Image 1 (cartoon, rainbow, N blue to C red):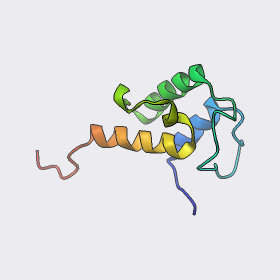
Image 2 (tube, one colour):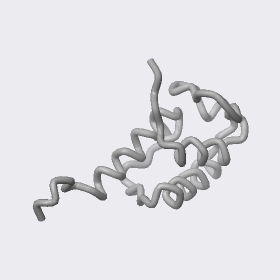
Image 3 (cartoon, rainbow, N blue to C red):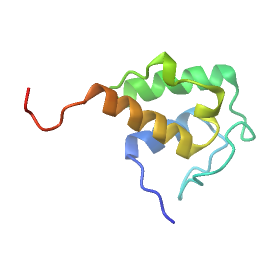
Image 4 (cartoon, rainbow, N blue to C red):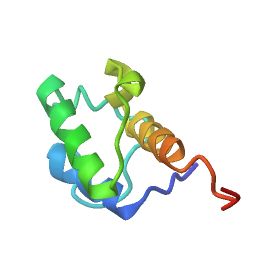
Length: 92
């Protein structure tokens, strides 16, 4: 199964986690903590993603497992985007 992520998302991950491969597909299930991501790196990644994707990730969505895999981080980003755009129908 191939997962498609936003280019800004992938670029930000690669910038913040140098141990990720520089090119090619990212493994959706790679353990990012085993690739060197630590608590400080998680905070830096969070801030970089918020800036790059123009989102705010609510504190209540943040857990240690939120940053364990690329898929977990992508789900976190999507949840934040959904929270910020609750009404896509324009019926406000």
